[in-house]
Amino acid sequence: TCKNARMHTPVYYQKPEDAFQHPNRYTMLQALDWMLNKLSMIGKEIRESDRCRRTVEETLCEENGFNLLEMYCGCGAHTMAIAKTGIFDSIVAVELDKRLVSACKENCERNNCSPVQVEDGSCGGKDPISPVHVFQGE
Image (cartoon, rainbow, N blue to C red; front, side, top):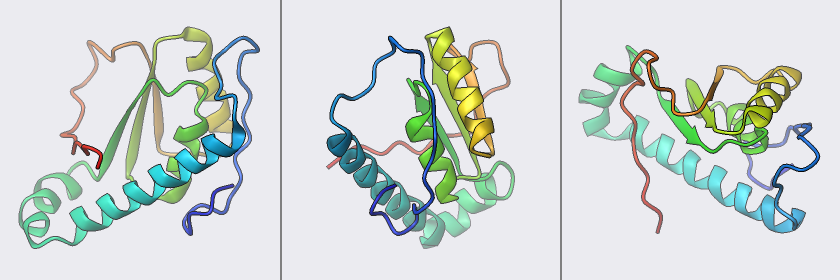
């Protein structure tokens, strides 16, 4: 679990034995906590801003919700933690490695993470993805 106030539910996941995983659990949890805090702040800022109420919420939040595109999701360790926060109305998680796509789908089901859509590869040829808000780090 993470220190983030919104994330107290542990997630359980499996991954293919030879797939990449961060070698330092403590560092991975610190990075995840940082990311969840940033996402929480961004979500709050977008949902509460006057400009958002007139533009984003009218065009996005009412029609498509507040969405996240996660590239290189791996087995879904971060995907599940993000989904459990409830910050996003939907998450599209993309991974190139077919073994990890399967693992991510299974892990999301195992942890009752919704609404997560896991895609193999580039998502090409599918329905267009809703507009995305890009966060550029500090």
